Length: 193
Image 1 (cartoon, rainbow, N blue to C red):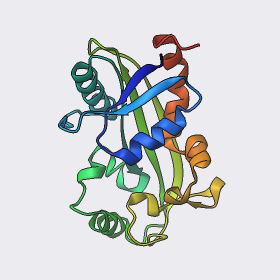
Image 2 (image 1 turned 120 degrees about the vertical axis):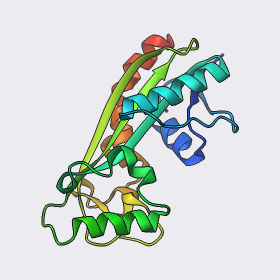
Image 3 (image 1 turned 45 degrees about the vertical axis):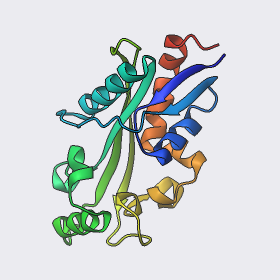
Image 4 (image 1 turned 60 degrees about the vertical axis):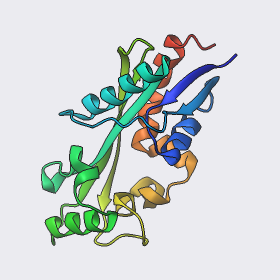
């Protein structure tokens, strides 16, 4: 019987993305219960990821993995960072705010930073890892309807973050890097062969 791991998010796209990244591991991945809603009140990505992992572990009485991430822009002293999701009401408004704040600055380096946390069934965070994907912000989104990922150009891939395919996301993406860094701990903790 496969060990079960709850991904502490209600976002099915994020669950699928993390499941692909953990693909080689012999585990059954499930999304957190639909009615679980955790307020992200932490002062860091690690704090917020821990809040979500603990809540999901306690609710499901099993192992849980959570992540928190944000876009950090060097010229804006790391903003929007921890407040990326709450920087404006819509993706379009978030992009416009970032572009307005950057203005004509030639300094457009930025990164997506992700922190992943594993909680054991008792609600204790037992491992964490961070992944960073560096790029440069375009002066306009590469495609319509996207979020920050439509703005961050990844030089190695010659496309924006939002245009990365699954293999590129696992290798270059911030969440993919965090998942790879966390995989040995996940194997050890869940006693996976």
